[in-house]
Amino acid sequence: MKKFQKLSPEQIAKSVQVFAELKVDRFFWKASGYTDEELSRPVIAVANSPQDVGLGHMHLKQLGEAVKQGVLLGGGVPIEFSTIAPCAGHCRNLGSQDEVLLYDLPQRDAIADSVEIQMRNYNADALICIGTCDKIVPGHWLGAARLDLPTLFLPGGPARPGTFRGQPTAFPTDVALTLINEYLADQISAEQMREQMREMESRWVTGCGACPELTTANTVQMATEAMGLCLPMASTTPGNDMEKLRQAKQTGFRAVQLVREGLRFRDLVTAESIRDAGRLIMALSAGTNGILHLLTLARYLQLDIDVDTFDFLSDDTPYYCPVRPSGPFTVVDLHEAGGVFAILKRIESKVHRDRPTICGRTVGELMDATQVLRPEVILPAEKPIYPTGGIKVLRGNLAPDGSLCRYTISGGQDQTFRGPARVFRSQQAAIGAILGGRIQSGDVVVIHYQGPRGGPGFSENFRVPLILGALGLCDVAVVTDSRFSGATEGALCVGYVSPEAQVGGPLAVVQDDDIVRIDCKSKSLDVELDAAVLAERLAAWQPPRPPITEGVLVDWHLTATQFPDGAMLQRRL
Image 1 (spheres, rainbow, N blue to C red):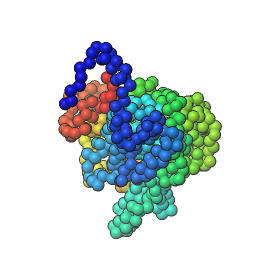
Image 2 (image 1 turned 180 degrees about the horizontal axis):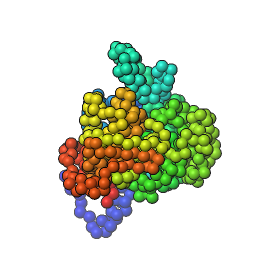
Image 3 (image 1 turned 90 degrees about the vertical axis):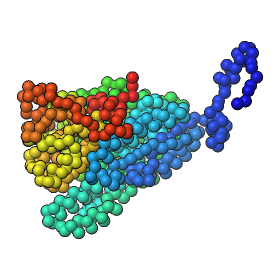
Image 4 (image 1 turned 45 degrees about the horizontal axis):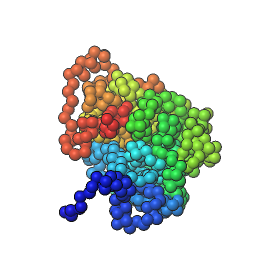
């Protein structure tokens, strides 16, 4: 180690100014090839999520390059880094394992952590987030919320649908359920089923982007636009359209302007903007996970938003956009109809018009500049499909703290269902019972210990309703403390039951043949047991050991909050 001359007190006093002016980071920037001119400009970090496998993320590398071009045009310096972006649909053993979907929601918090950690290292002046799918966009929300920088989002957009027998296809189930049902009904042979399935594997979508129905991916992309975090129309512009490249360049250019204007993430994401995004979800009957992610964001930011907020928004917002899986139209149809601000324009008296957006115009100005171009896709709010939002908050002795029911995938707003419980500890066990013929019309399939701590990880239930639909068992209900995929359709499904079974919620002690009642009109979910019987069962209950004992899911079992508190890992003291 080199020895330096010992300094006098007077010389040490001079060091204060020297060390204050020393910029050691410049050594590393220069070693990375940056120039003095570049280091005098705003540094714009780009959190991208490209993947070789993932139709929602395969095109994001090209979009990231266009974003960086826009930053350079605006006079900034772009630096790009990547976050993870798994899609459970690509898992090669998804059909036979519950474990895969336990890691689904934890992606979100891992992404948020990675954005926070990378950005604290960069100390950049602004952040641009590029993402498409379910957990990536909300992960970017949470990471941005922790940083509170000038922040813009570039959604990857929906994919363009394919066609099957003259009808648009937005999800693989559009093909698979039809063919499986026809085969089981002896309408086609096994070889015909396999041949048509193989043919449609390559044609169910025709480009990159999110599956073009109201999956969680499109739900959170559109919620991003409703909150004012991306350019108008960016959330619904198909991924392969040339307009998407222009939006990418404009996003990069605008990021440099935001640095100079000082508009930050928390200036845009307020209780008002989250309420407006919630109204959008209700008007569309979009994915229920969208409500969870908005609730998570609000709870982290300590905003005055809770489950009751979404209960009110449901009662106060009509459902008037019949988009799949609840209606015939795709998200691309919705884009052609006018997009997010055309939807909000139908209920503009309920929307916060004075909210700012990243494009420099208020929400009111954007609605004023928007027209509904396809009124069959975005119906008049005065003539809705139903006068209440497409998702209802149900409470009762099975869900004291609430649950969610997207009633539009199975029938009308006043649906009721009453039947004997068939209780399972896992989705795989429930599937075995369904395929074994042990589930009959009128049954209520109850799947517990699937929540934030019980899963652990708050598993997503997709396969059970899918299989029920393929077998024509749409007169069976499903009740669970797991989440539901935005692509779920067919059976009446109630999820997010809280408190979850693992922490002693009443769902833990439901037994086979208990009568469960779901009432969408009264917004209730109950088991028909005397209060004393229910209390006696709960008093004798003991929590089971978790199925996962190592890895990242241990944190979820130990610390994850319940659905009303955002179902997230603790990130505040």
